[in-house]
Every structure is written in structure tokens, then in C-alpha cells.
Amino acid sequence: MAKVLVLYYSSYGHIEKMAEAIAEGARAGGAEVDIRRVPETAPPEVVKAAGFKTDSPHPVIEDVSALADYDAIVVGTGTRFGRISSQMAAFWDQTGPLWAKGALIGKVGAAFTSTASQHGGQETTLFSILTNLLHHGLLVSGFDYGFAGLNGVEEVKGGTPYGASTIADADGSRMPSEVELAGARYQGKRVAETAAKLFG
Image (cartoon, rainbow, N blue to C red; front, side):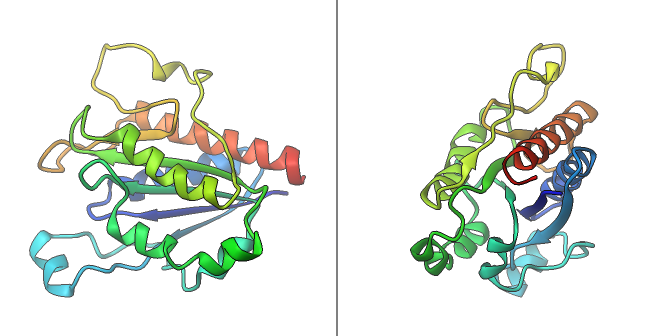
């Protein structure tokens, strides 16, 4: 049984919901799944003033070395001006020793994200996540067009071939839609199935 880590950072709960859907899909694909958050790096006064969601049910990952324990790592974070959030970047900036040992080479990697608008940097943020994974030697699993919801313009929705995504609206009021969550489940299942073929 493949072991999958869903690793995320979420300020307002959008990515948290997507992480849960990714994990649900990975479990449906036969994997053992852990969901972990990266540590918050914003000062407490900023967290409070900005109204960040702080009551997550998922534990914080304590040590970057834990990444080596998994067959697949699916990374999610909201965009910050078209790129990875500083919280997620700070976590990956600590992984130099893992890189030096090649500890993550050959594992499966994938990405998911959230933006305020349809053109708010989903693809560039996904690529900024995937860049970290590729430097570590992970084999990237995308979000393929086997998921029919990637097509169609009948509703506002996230989703790119580079990773599942959701659109939160400028005030954060829009939570992931059912089609976006279904896409995240699909991606999670594909990651689990790919990892099983490699490590099962």
C-alpha cells in the first residue's frame, strides 16, 4: 500500500477543504494517507487582524525529514501574487539536507492551489510548487483531462492540467465547488494509483 502525504498551507480554509478532498481521493485509490499543515510564519497579530482560520483538525508537520517517509507528496497552498505562499516556501527552504541526500528522488509529487480570481495566478503558483518537487527529483503527476470537469465553461471553476484548484473570490467568500472538490478527489486518486504502480 502506497503512503501519501497531503501537505498544505491554508489561510482561510479553501486549501484545507481541497486537501481533504485530495486525501479522500488518494484513500479511494488504495493509499494510506496523512494530512499535515506547514507551520504558520505570520506574526500572531497579523493572523488575528487578517482573520486567518486557526482551528484546523490537521496537525502541523514537525520536521521536514518526515517527507522521506512517504511514497507520494501532494502539496497545496493558496497563491501569493502568482507564486507559492511564504509559509510553504519557508518549509521547503529547510529541505536542503533531504536534497543533498537525494531522499525524495523517485517519489510521486503533485500540486493544488487556490486563487481569488480565474486569472489570479493558478498556473504560476502550481509551477512554483512543482519547481520545488522537480528539484528534489519527484516524478510529477498532473491533473489530466480524464477528469471531464476540466472542460466546459458553464460555470466558474478552477482546474488546470498542472493541478487541481479552486477560486475563492476577492473577499474569500466562495468555498470550493463540488466540481472543484471532485477534481481534487480525482487528482488524489491518480497520485495514489501512480504511487502504487511504482511502490506497491
